Length: 270
Image 1: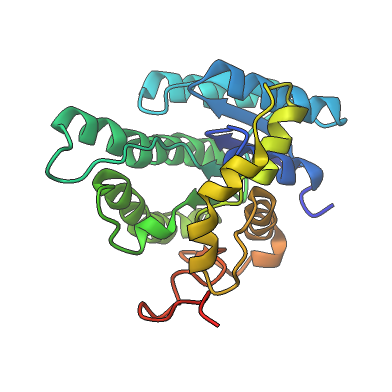
Image 2: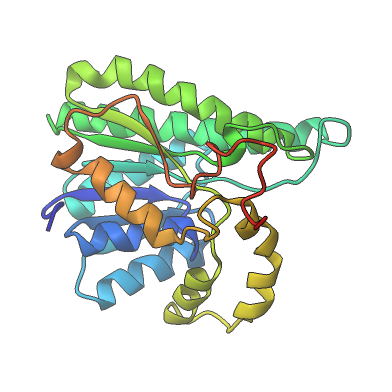
């Protein structure tokens, strides 16, 4: 196992991207601290990992509340000994544009995406330094952080900001043997998320209905196939492992070629 004996803290452990990354890390021997503002997401993720023989703890936490962030880091040390890997994944969606976005909603979305990553990076890095752990921090971006999407102003801005936050933090923490990278997902095939939800004991949902909703995204990526959360999970395992020991300040795109595509070319045209 690539990450045997390591401890990872993942924020935003829903059944989609965060849950997929958490399960992938656990499959490689990592103990998990599953963090989410929704208690059921944190608890269900941890419960499933433990049911497969792994070690995990679920922690309910508002990533914008510094006292709660500190408590989550302290709990990770108390229950699992410390933290070697941090995945900043927590985010909320708010499909509003610059004209109709209320200031408070703008602030809240940026507080979660950027503020949450800042607080967890700050306090996890301090813990890593104190315990002399060689750490890996991974910030989850989005293709929306690389491109201008209309009517999604705060999400695009927050995810774009995380790109340079990653580079700046990487340069600051490199002296402490802590690597900081980012991982860019894109629109994600919903099938695996629905299957994971069933494994976690969630109500059944229609796969076909959701797949139809994602069909325009599938047709727009060069590979004509959308990634799954486990695709991101394998990339996170790589970035967290010794295989990536010389990689810091870099963004790894797992986007089926979405960002590289020339704007005028439609991959679905034959």
